[in-house]
Length: 252
Image (cartoon, rainbow, N blue to C red; front, side, top):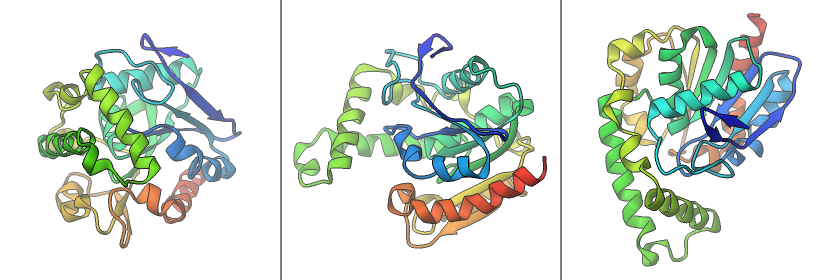
């Protein structure tokens, strides 16, 4: 479908219950959910929507338009194009979860609940860490020796990262100051939030500062897993989030 002027690849698991939209992270696709969480969440009764962010997967790759607010506008327009009028439940992984915090800030009336997996709000501190991370990724994907011997999945992700970085403004857009939020902004996100965090991840190390902005959030820690826990332990992520989502259904 075309949403916010961009052609987006969307996959839907129809259900009789409320709508739930999955948002993936950078250099990823909707496949990260399609083969892990989407089916079990649909079986709970949710009307599940997954899609490829602009520039990713089978969605269109325009040369510009990769700020957080662009991602928010794409999501908002896609939900409207699908004819979804009810507030949506949202699940985001990594950058996808960061997009959701901004979405909930700009469109609080459109959000029923949020599950954010290895994600944090788009604060200035997040932007600084993201810039450092992008530099590290760029150093690896641009060095054939560093990629030699890596699993096929990472080889493919590296090729996608290189193409996205070389043909778009994504590396500068995603940390644009206009999309960042202050601690006061984050505290206005007044919906149920579940944070799923890897016990060995960088995010786990500064979790107290995140929770200081979200005192009402529920936290589930997956021990011995890092930022890639949706790849390394999808069944544990599923086990952590399904009971929480089921409670959200009971609130209807």
